[in-house]
Length: 513
Ligand SMILES: Cc1cc2nc3c(=O)[nH]c(=O)nc-3n(C[C@H](O)[C@H](O)[C@H](O)COP(=O)(O)OP(=O)(O)OC[C@H]3O[C@@H](n4cnc5c(N)ncnc54)[C@H](O)[C@@H]3O)c2cc1C
Image: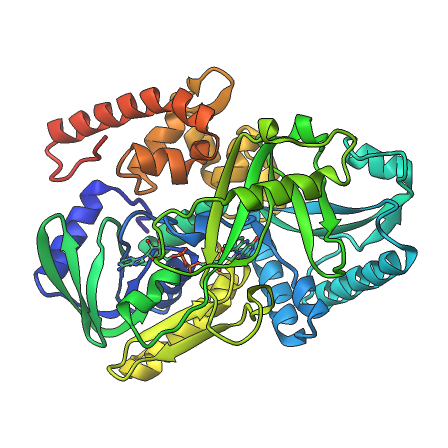
């Protein structure tokens, strides 16, 4: 099984497609949805090509809150089916497909004077219902413990930065958290490649039909032929298939330091005043950062490649977080920000209320488009999309095996804990961590833990083609502009060295700086 993605493999596989090879399933889009589909189809024995305009996880899939949701929010809206689907998929991801990339995240709702006793009782009942979903999905309580009320001292021990003057306790619950969303996408793409899928980045599709696509490779146009075509281009899906109508909504996160926010390992869930089911989240990350999000605002107009956080969102998030902290956060505390667009299906109503359900749509010429959904349910979305493709193309394939298919690097938690590698690397690379640890351990810059060896791994195994891929997607250094600036020169040098080595070894395509 060759799971390595790199420039040499890309060149070879693109040449095969340009020479007329016909694949069973052509997927457009290298986000969590497209890579999930490529894996599902390839694991069923179908031949697959995936075309991504930029890089893996270039779109919305890298701008999420990085949560593997148990579906509580959908339960609050009365959508039991979607809530149950989320809880089931969370369990599969955390116990079977990607234990290495996920962990149980303690989440605390602080009970201060702004939260009435009635609202607290309502939220506690909601958390108990969420736990019932966990039990129905058979996710062990050893992994995600049941919710409970905690005292004020316990709440402060979990989040020392909380305002204590009116703190009467908190509601503690557990949900799933990813090490990083972009790393999940890379793991999916590599696992698909291990089953023979051709994963081609820097391959923008300019036109799509039910039997193939026109792709731009530099300045040359290539026709790729396929028995079925799945459009998984997220918020850009309507550009390829105009009959697809989306209502994108923008979500913003800020990046602050955990020390500044006064957070330990637990997240803070801050109820929005006037709402019992909408919250602002302070989400601690493994690297001493906290992501503070998130907003949900309708987005009109041309879809940008990289959305920008509006100042009004920044102000709103700072105000909400400050409302529960002893020391209010200001713009001076913001280390970075990011924003993403949800690919929601068009329907009447406020964007925050639009369903997160997914749908597989068929255009008159037979292109299948998958829209909606979320990161947590990518596996189920992929299964549904490939089932539709099998029917559409009358393809010979069995049922989806992905429920029990570990991604590259995955292993049961007890096995991961015995690996001889730093915890930071295990959470990023799983069983491959010892191999990464054996590479050059020099940090990219003082105070940044990421090593030269990780950059080498990104180029050799993870399909990184240039410094941007490394800085913004294989690592998330790009989320904090000062970290980006500090690491960029070393990453550029490492890329230049890798490119000249590849040229000396006669590889037809090499990474570029
Ligand atoms: C702010 C925010 C927070 C979120 N938080 C969570 C969360 O915590 N948990 C959760 O489960 N979900 C979350 N979601 C939802 C989740 O992130 C998305 O549903 C999911 O990432 C969408 O993935 P996708 O693959 O469909 O789209 P994308 O990731 O956008 O992928 C589409 C890809 O298609 C490519 N593409 C576009 N046009 C072309 C073309 N012509 N040719 C080739 N390629 C093309 C793009 O470059 C892109 O890489 C969040 C969403 C947002 C916006």
